Image 1 (tube, protein in one colour):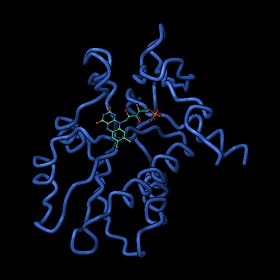
Image 2 (image 1 turned 180 degrees about the horizontal axis):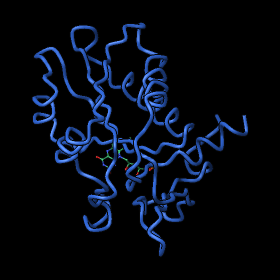
Image 3 (image 1 turned 180 degrees about the vertical axis):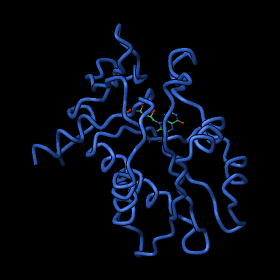
Amino acid sequence: MDHFMELLETRRTYRRFEQREISQDIIDDILTAARLASSAANRQPLTYIVIKEPDKVAGVFAHTKWAGALPPEQGQPKEEERPVLFIAVVENLAVNPDCDTDAGLAIGNMTLAAWNRGVGSCIIGACNKPALAEMFGLTQSQALHTVVAFGYPSHASRVVDMEDPTQFKYYLDEKRDYCVPKRRLSDVVRYL
Ligand SMILES: Cc1cc2nc3c(=O)[nH]c(=O)nc-3n(C[C@H](O)[C@H](O)[C@H](O)COP(=O)(O)O)c2cc1C
């Protein structure tokens, strides 16, 4: 259990990566973790597209935005810092059009399974969905939920206590490591 809580604590969003391939074995773990996630009425409306060839990864990257809280020169990965893998999460609307929670659970499992193998990730909601949907050949009954970027991190990221409830933006410290303010338990929990 301690290991699991440590996994949760250290599984942060990573935005700079080593240019090192991720083995298929690890990709299989990530996809299996998505497959095993809970699903409303067990309908399982999600499918996944794996993008791992470098030129295709670059094509997807071109349609993604990183670290909205930071100036681009700080938050946008430079060419030698980019992720080496994307997995797109696709909603199959005929199976269940209301699958945002399913997607969140699957993405949570994916990022944890990756981190369990030392692979960091960044969930990318800020992407050009029409352009990516066309690139992925999605049909009328499919919608792109998110793309998730993966790679071996080349920076650290740590949780810090949020001192001021309005200061939720993450920031970089002097070593360019990410600091992620989280609200204290006492600020978010009430026992009835
Ligand atoms: C639904 C969702 C969409 C996100 N979209 C982006 C994004 O487009 N670009 C980005 O750099 N980070 C994105 N993130 C990452 C968040 O910024 C990050 O989770 C947050 O700053 C907290 O950091 P943590 O994941 O380390 O706790 C997204 C996260 C979630 C949950």
